[in-house]
Image (cartoon, rainbow, N blue to C red; front, side, top):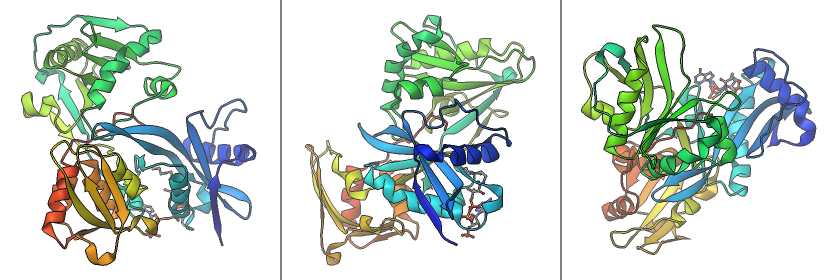
Length: 386
Ligand SMILES: CC(C)(COP(=O)(O)OP(=O)(O)OC[C@H]1O[C@@H](n2cnc3c(N)ncnc32)[C@H](O)[C@@H]1OP(=O)(O)O)[C@@H](O)C(=O)NCCC(=O)NCCS
């Protein structure tokens, strides 16, 4: 039995819609006027004997990475029809779509896995674990708000973009959302309520206000660019909790709540983290700059799905940029698998995080030092859900 994986064509609509319906809509049919592939997305299908049995959607995104942006495909709604499962369709979808992504100039892919171990086989790894905070109302800290709070109208969404972008710039892996992505991430046709802190805006909270009493109040997005915006945001969230049990929201690994407000009874956990995978190793290095001097190293990356990523690559860098060229195997200084490379490149867990795994072989320690200089530890975060 052979599985053919290929990009979506308009004539695939019924088959693609059937997979969506059976895997993600409890069997409810897709309406004929629904746009299944939004303008910033592309579809992939897997077929057996001409019948579509699996599909996913890829979202065209730009991820922050060390003060630049990297073209990223966010992979969503991976699904295989129930009767076609456990026959290798899901694995073929993941493995064989990868070359198309590379040919379409994607440097990185990301996804929220149902299980990390399934996607790890294809080079995906967890990077930059977002912290989920749940704080009981009774333990919620009292913090002095110093900035004015304003409720935005849905059509004023654009006003928070500069604040989000300034926040995003501090982390690797944040999506620099386009128009459609802003609308989708902020609730689509039933938008979240937005409350901003400061004028100009220094922070904001996006929230689906819960009218039911004594339940958790989830906060969809909490973004801040100053300590006073963080304090005002916390004090605002506390006002939502008069008849709630708790509030839940996400923060990056360097978020202030765990560092400054943690108490016993408050939960700081890891829930539904995102995975990343570098698709194109030389392109992932080319746009990097090193503000603190120059250096070089030779890197070899084992990649089953895209063997051309192996190199070895001689990487030379300075404050103007980075050059990457293929060299002889005898010059290799660092050897690692694509998953470990992705974790090192993403900045968190970074080179230190993969240092003592079997996935990294250091043949010349100076090469590892140089790689760490070009790609230092940096917090990872993605606030988009897809
Ligand atoms: C996940 C899904 C896409 C897999 O598709 P599939 O065609 O059945 O998968 P394949 O037959 O290609 O591969 C199955 C592999 O997944 C592994 N697998 C199955 N369930 C797993 C689980 N819960 N955790 C980890 N691995 C799992 C199997 O062990 C097998 O790996 P192996 O061949 O190396 O032993 C399919 O089950 C599905 O549509 N699930 C419902 C929707 C969903 O969860 N999608 C994923 C969204 S991130």
